Length: 268
Image (spheres, rainbow, N blue to C red):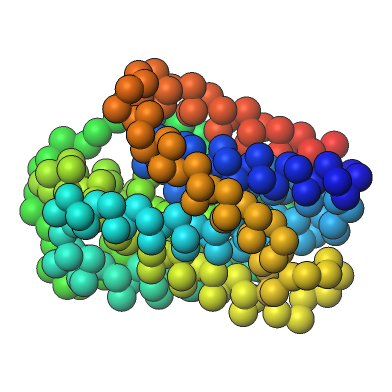
């Protein structure tokens, strides 16, 4: 791929990530990972490392997105900080540990796992699946265990954890508004632990392209993060004017298509 083409592709990707993050409250990993994988392959990066680089770069970009989202939900009083305190130790351990698993799994199985998980996320959106509240939040041990699982899965697919933490909290009788706001707050430790984990695990890895820090490709990180932060407020403004329920279904379809395109690029 011509260098001028991918320098154009990164800001366009950032714009899409920021817009949908503001519009639908998603972290953007579902868009970033398959698109970055395809772009990295087109740039001639070694196939053995492209999925790990896409996951690490996506996780690092989510740090900035999650800070913006957290602040917005905190201003509206939607964050249950008691839940954040209890679940964060497990989140940090699970996410950091998950990066060690991801680093040791080959690109193709990792891509298949990512695609299957995105199919689950898409089904959640298309069917508007919401678990019925049936219990209370567990104690410190139970919350740590939940955090471990949410963090581990989040590290393997480079997401902010909302597709797992929101259903978990809803199941535990947390109001939906608080579940979404608290999930946004949980996204920050997930992103930080995931970024550190992918940085550590990629340090000294063979055949890495230039301008990488661990499994984080810095040019993509800087450009995607900068443009996503610019477009996120635009998406948030339009959230109150556009048919979000319909857009969620379209977005779910896009996630499936992007995952399929990524698999085709890898197997092709």
